[in-house]
Length: 298
Length: 298
Image (cartoon, rainbow over all chains, first blue to last red; front, side, top):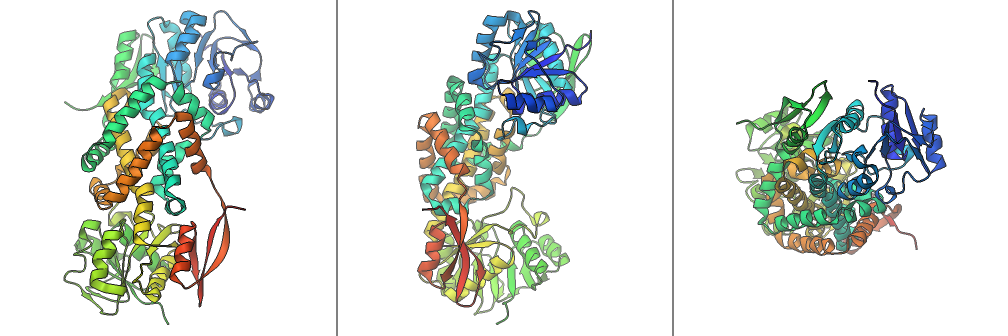
């Protein structure tokens, strides 16, 4: 069966980069954006601009625009629909209610503080983890179809449930943005001299809050419950004696296990177990997928 | 008057880089390190290894080793002594008691998570701010002599008092290290899936806790009072509504005023005022220094 066509709705940094990466891999890509400037930029890079969508339809729009992203567009009733949003429980709830087993929630763990169609980069996904939701109601064949799109642009696919995803990204994405904001705002309180002495550790620790505040706010408020839990974990860590805290943080930051190649059957439980073990899928074969898990010895 | 010779005690990352930068600028550099491997590496790069120190003597050793760094070495009674330590109040107190007005506390705001003599980089100081303490008892002529060493390796000199320095670096260096540790440790609690999905914002937010834990612990415990105050500021920021916190952090992170060139007389109050305004010295002239302050309009 030939790979289905891919239609990207929203041609900003993420969607535009995905379109560019698929075009670079020799795939045909169609797409749409409400912004005529973004449409024109994408068309100039070889994207067929259309309002008729089919195959794998990728919603690459900001979270607040997700629900209305397909309004006024014509979607093939057999299309598989996926998204690139940074929160999964509310998105999966909303879009599964509309598309049933045809919806597969996704989240590529990449992107930078830049945004917009000028920030597109066909290499953006190479080596990135791409979380892909395997809910009880997900059609595994459609999940694999979306996984193949992710693999084709060089990402590694991490099978997750939406709640697992949201807990994880609260800890490693929402909270880092809030800490960066608090670090910058507190240094602003400390004064002009502090900001003028700021060097590497401050620059690194605040980089992500250079991102568009609307994007960051949507990400944290859209995942408020898990983000609160994850932020409380940080607060408790900050109350520990500093030498203990420093030793723990250093141990986590520098832990670098090897990888062990595994084959996983096309089965929801087995795939989710791979994700929970910290592994990822990097190849689709006929009756199984190939991937890896951290090799922690023992 | 010719530039005085520079003697660097401690030839690890910072000291070795300073020696390399001065050698690259055509200056003669002598130095010493308790570690014969570091001595040999420095000698191979052109440093004259000796235990007889004079001119400007730079203590480039870890904080816990500062007090004993000159034990067993012969120091010219007219030498100017400075240091590169990341905390200034205790270091200035201890070394001023020993060297009086001959001691000038300093702290170049650079360095990376790498350490040791293999990490030396003659460009390490280029464009960096170098805080230099102007206490009531500091001899201004000696302060200028140390400032010239900093300017020669491409740094900009920020005149500060030791307490001002320690408050500032608590906010922009000690606290970022503690937040990085808490972020990493809390993500470790969140679990394997979270760590496996960790991408740019987590990597940036935890980078500095990849540093040697002993170095980080010495930095924060050696500046405990100001660090507690600065950490409390962060805690209060984290209690604000997230959209407000994000807006404040973004505003501080992206504030980028221009620079206005200024001339400052060789006077303690005028120099300290330059530092408090967020400015720095980048040129020594006969009767004044030239520098810049942020141009915030108005």
